[in-house]
Length: 94
Image (tube, rainbow, N blue to C red; front, side, top):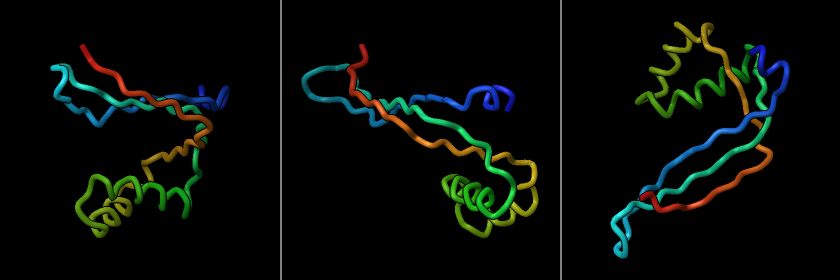
């Protein structure tokens, strides 16, 4: 939190879509670097909605998400990244 208060600029990298093509043995990977600004989302309806949207990726149904948020949601801090620039590439790992 202190670092974000001093400077809200962030970047992170996501790797995925590994494929093996016929012409070479080494896998091809795609990656994206995201540049943007990160903001703390104060508790409230927006924070709860973002937390639920995120949790739906990992829980099997909305009822379980709602129960978990009701039980422990106050302990979660939600941050939102405003994307300013993306840079992607595909490379062959060797």
